[in-house]
Length: 378
Ligand SMILES: [Zn+2]
Image (tube, rainbow, N blue to C red):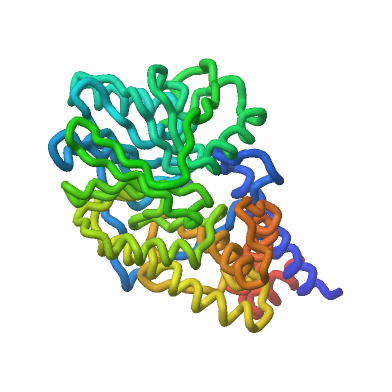
């Protein structure tokens, strides 16, 4: 090895160390067990040719008489991890809530906003699916009967033994240390369930598997409103770790055929059918790009490092491209199950990071004439 090679290797080691430090600085609030999470470094780049997502505010927005969406704020540069939306339908004497949010701060804010707007308490809570950002707030709906699809209930029950006993102070989630309990649903339904809440018809439809194997959406035909849960991600890259993407696309197409104007996603701003069609297109564009590389026997992490999605590169949480690619691959190679394959995602993220580190090393390579000067000086 000559001195030039030694310097070159040294520069590579430095880049590697910097990447490791960057990873170590990030924390994962919502990791639920499994192998240690590896962060994509750097995440996929945005594309200046296309618009950035809008910014939206936290609000309880009345969509129709007695019907409210609770949107948590978001936008470019604001992490969308674990920040979900919920809803309220007000009856004569009580409220029906859809989803419980991710912890004490948002759950209590949601309950307080609903009480302020209606003067009523929540008597029923219907969960759209089992993810922590939709069910971790269950314990704060102390008077409510909790309902879900059976798959959601069984996943919540599975998560109970691993749930910490305390909420620890976490920005936007918990203000102080306090007792934490994951409360499971007590009522399950696997066919459509229709409520008449003070004259408002609410059709809970079991549409999974899509985002998960237990998805429920709420359709209000009188008002042409759909609460999508995580069947909808608007301007936010969809999270597919428990998903069946082909069927998720079919579900989007079915809902696009419903008589509906206002669609409330699980993540992102309140919008309409155009935004749901865009999310479907995200999966289709990714599916085409990933399939080419799958057929060429390229590992999913290497494919993720290469794939560009055009306008979807600007969506919030672009690193979900990796998990979504892993999930497409699992469909194609016949290994898809309802469970999150944490090892496959971790492995793909390591592959992705290796490609990005090599790209960085090449782009940072010191010009040869400059390197000669350094070598002479050593
Ligand atoms: Zn979810």
